[in-house]
Length: 126
Image 1 (cartoon, rainbow, N blue to C red):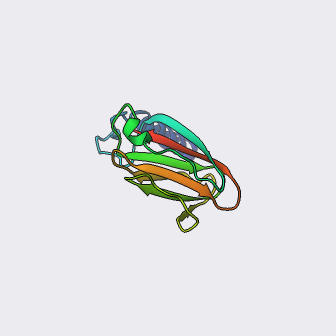
Image 2 (cartoon, helix red, strand yellow):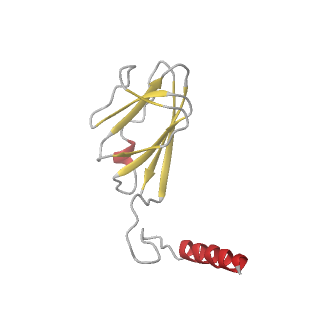
Image 3 (tube, one colour):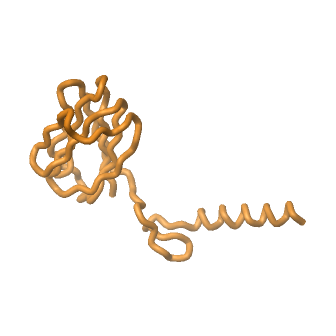
């Protein structure tokens, strides 16, 4: 009996997950927060010289309100509506830590190394 109940719960969980829609609603029709589709990705190398991904948000084919940012090594990250300048005074993003940022058209996102160079990856979220 116990095995049957555990199996029934597992099947119900899989069925619930399988019925989630692509419109950002769960099987019950409730809106799920922070549900995005991946759009184009942009990569740029940074060292003591900052990465240069200025203008990618305005050049994206689909309007967006958010991007996911990941750096392969710890980096200082800057975001601005004018060309951002990343310096060692900016926020430190740990290596391989995805960060979702709210953006507006024309935003610039740049990174500079914390201790060693790496790659800044920015993914447009739709």
